[in-house]
Length: 205
Image 1 (spheres, one colour):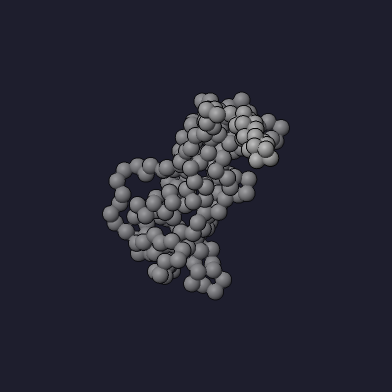
Image 2 (tube, helix red, strand yellow; image 1 turned 90 degrees about the vertical axis):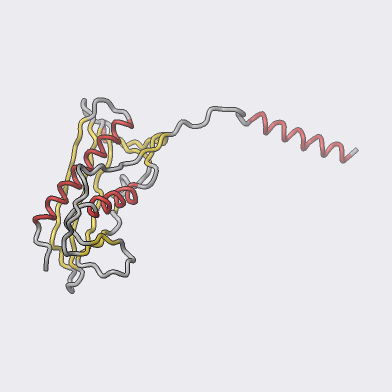
């Protein structure tokens, strides 16, 4: 009799637990995005003389998340749980930057940290802003990056180039897909301007 009572209690608990679970419910409707730059024209087959090491881009704590970030009126900041980057911004933008510079004609090689090749110069960068600004009547995508070229062969690791690039791209509407498209346009413009500035900067020792 005691065994039957225990079995009945177990079955009751299972049935109650099952009733609490919404079986067949609609899954969370999450969307994933990627900033994938599209370099215009064909890659240049000529190369420069220098080997450039590109470190992983660091990202401001405010935007170091896969979730899309929105700035609203009154100083409010929101993150979008349902609309996200597929990978973290730092990894995503670093990969795009290395590919962009590798396809340019500026350097002989683009290498990553940990390579056995000794670089001539090192590029470091910070993503200071990556968000949708919805605090005004016209929503905009905001992208800001700061770059440094360091000569690590010097005792003081001399900075031989630095610049900050900011892009604000208006949106037709405050929609996640349009925001990512505008961010992509901003990143491409920043990469193009960085390449142009590096081409005229006194990088050679």
